[in-house]
Length: 427
Ligand code: SF4
Ligand code: SF4
Image 1: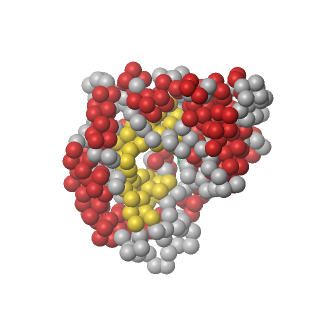
Image 2: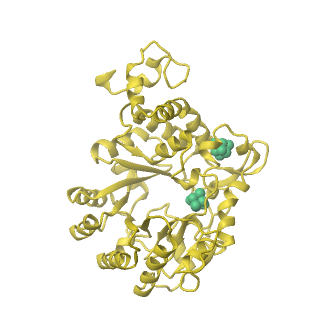
Image 3: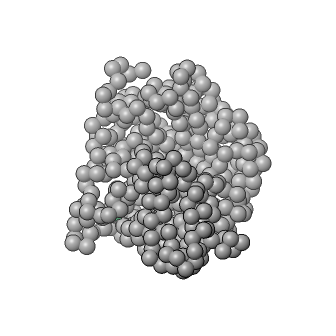
C-alpha cells in the first residue's frame, strides 16, 4: 500500500485491463484496438503472472470503496485461456481486504466461449459483455474473422452457452453506417430473440487517419451519421418507454434518468469531468482512457509507480478536468448540457456554428435525442422524487386518451405520438 495515499486519489475508479493487448481472433473492420499493435512492435502481448499479481494487488490497495470491479477487455481477453482468469480470481481473494467485495466483468466477442468458461463465470458471478451488432446481416457487415468470414453464428453459440449456464450478460452493440437505419430491428432482436435485459449502444466514430490515434477532422465511411445516431436512440427510447421500463435496461436511458434526477452519473461520457476510467496494457503501461491508448496519454507503468499514484497524478487529473474546461461556449449555453456535457472528448473535433473548435461530432444527434426525451424523463424523475417508480410512466402513457395531448410534452395528440409506439394489445 502506498503511504501516504495521495490526496487527489479518487476513492474508486474504473480500469479496463487488456491482458492480451489488442490481439483478437476476429478482424472487425471498425476496431480501433487492432492498430494498437504498432505501439509494441515484436511484443507477444500476454500479461505475465507476475504482472497479474501486481496489478490486482495494486487495484485493491488503490480503492477505498467497499466494492472493487476487476474488468477485462481486449482485443479478445479469452485468448489468455480460462486458467489465467482462475488465477486472477484467486489473487483477488488473497489480496482483498476483509471489508472489500470484488466483482468481475469481461468484455468478449463470445466466439471462444465453452462450458468451462461459463462454469468459471457462474462460480464467481462474472458479468459478461457480448459484442454483437444486431441480427446476422447487420452484425456480419463489419464483424468478421481474419478470413473475412461472418461471425454471427459463433457469437450466438456463445450467448446460448451463457444463457444455459445462467451467466449474467449484456449486449454491447455498436451503431455504425451499416445498422444506423435499423434501431427497432436491433432492439427487438436483443429483447425478443436473445432475451437480453441489459443493452448498451456505442456510436462508431472512427477517425480517418493512418495512426489509429484520436487526430484529424474526418471520419471513415463506417462511422455513424450524427443525425441518424440521434434518430436511432430516439426510436429505441420510444419503444422502450411504453413497454420495457424496469425490465430492459439501456445504459444511455439509465444515465439520462440519473441526469434528470440529479443523481451521480454512471457513464463517464455524460459527466462534467472524467479521468476515472483508465486502461492498463498487457505490460503494465497505464493510459488515461481506453480511447486514448496512444503515447501522449501514457501516464506510467505500474511496475515502476503504484497505480494509485498514477491515477492521482496531476496529468491524469488534468486529463479529466479538460473534459469540462475545453467545452465550447455553444455547449456551455446548451439546454441539454446537464445531460450531455459535450459527451466524450474523443469525439470533439468539429466546429460550432460560430466557428469555435471542440464541438462533438455527434452533437446534432445528442441535441435531438435529449430534447426528445425531456418530457418523459421529467415525468419519470418526478415519479422517483415522489417516492414512486419510474416504470409507472408506462401506465401514464397507456391511460392517456388518444385525442389528448401526449404526456411526453410533444404538443401532439397521443394517437399521433407515443400511443403509436404502444404494444398492439394495449392500443
Ligand atoms: S475520454 Fe471519454 S471515454 Fe475516456 S474517460 Fe473521458 S469521457 Fe470517458
Ligand atoms: S448537445 Fe451538442 S451543444 Fe449540447 S452539450 Fe451536447 S455536444 Fe454540446
